[in-house]
Image (cartoon, rainbow, N blue to C red):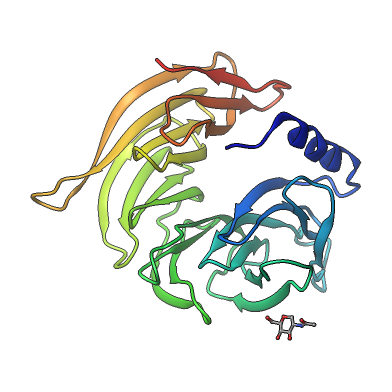
Length: 283
Ligand SMILES: *[C@@H]1O[C@H](CO)[C@@H](O)[C@H](O)[C@H]1NC(C)=O
């Protein structure tokens, strides 16, 4: 949000010129600065927000049998006010300490609780410890963390046979999208399950959350995009999930879906073999 068109062009230039074929690009917003973070098969690159200067570069170690396992970084999130977390194909989560300015980025910690490739990472700023980071992997396992000088594992939610392809965090609730088309909601502090819906007929590739309203966007291989609304019932403290809107992108396996505004009134979608981004306005 709030990024101007020229900046986008500059950043597209960075992506196109990069010899590393970036797999993911995220603007990480820390209180002191915004960095553009790219992951690729070779490692992690961090740029100033406008793409003008590379601030930091971290190469991934190639394991002993490089042919047996592909190496990549995936899952990017800003956490705990001054950290950027990046997941890797060997299950480790790299925690980088970001100075308020300058290039002295350091690898401050490596979180080693996952045994499978990391698929996604979500964080919620300003929750001070109480479950402000969640990491997901290919086996469907979720780890719940509190960020800080040292990151603390609060709990581990074992997978149940389906990959967890994306996670988001909202007001202490984790929403996770799975390969079997389900969305499950978990309490970030305790790991308790709060709700579950069979949202899609096939693999969910993308979830996004609108922080102002608690709207949740899901996009899947079944060519559907759904908008949901999360809310907390003040009497029972239950988390409720309500279906708001469905959109079918004909003949397209949806692989990316994002809200375009913090209230979740507009969203953008893309799919495999689609060279366009489709934008949907207020209903
Ligand atoms: C770089 O950052 C690390 C960790 O914050 C710190 O210990 C170190 O002194 C810094 N180095 C320089 C040259 O500022």
